Length: 344
Image 1 (cartoon, rainbow, N blue to C red):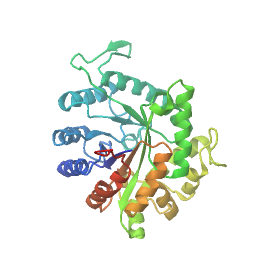
Image 2 (tube, one colour; image 1 turned 135 degrees about the vertical axis):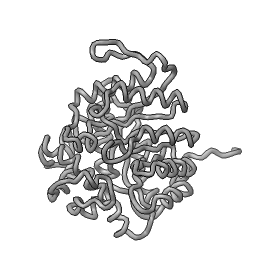
Image 3 (cartoon, rainbow, N blue to C red; image 1 turned 180 degrees about the vertical axis):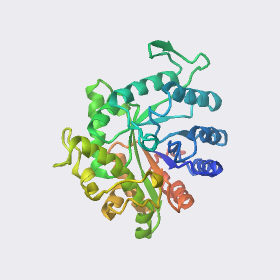
Image 4 (cartoon, rainbow, N blue to C red; image 1 turned 90 degrees about the horizontal axis):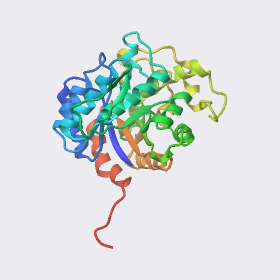
């Protein structure tokens, strides 16, 4: 299992770069950042600085969308960074949330998401692609490599992910929901004639090493609100769940808790002091996040690995960033890593 950290690009940008360097030092393989150009600083500029000051870390947005940038511009960023620093970028993409809603826009359609993935991936891999009636290619790009991982919750998005995504980003660590969603993605991949095991599975959730459970919950309750924001869209489309999540139905464990949701303020999106998350119960925080001692983190991560998770990306929007990364580097990551022996 690989490990990543998910950072907000809050000023000063040097702080994001510092945390990224620390993540690499502690053995994390990926640094992901939010991509919401009004709420935070522009991620790709900071990605360039991260790559310049690290040696092996892979960077990417968590997640970008097809609406706020022309798809060829997005692809050009990745191809350029790959030319400058080696193939150390990755594209996380979804239909669009805060970046488009803050400007009174709306998420793109599934068809647009599918097409954007194709355009970005082909150009980002130094290949030609049909776009707006023309065949396009970066004449300056040679040997660029770019995977596109898709963030999804609802049945249609999960199906699309299995059909075209190089990876699946699931932004919650609930074991029951993860099992259903991973199966849905892999079934879609198989139905599309793809090897389901070729699709990377990334579970992302707040990670907090500590022993004060009440404080950890309060620091991470924002995540239930963020997930609930996506779930509200699913419920609006499919209605509330009435079962365990079979077929196209969304699991009740995912939809029931938003019954008390009254709204959402993007000004506090993804922040520990989010003021629209009172509806999120402790049980959901515990299920969606990974909180507690190193032993408790390892136990939950082992369950996720058994479900087919190939990367855990931990959100660090709390007051214990450095210590959490240190314990992961010294204890958690080694426990989930296959070790070779010098002599047998």
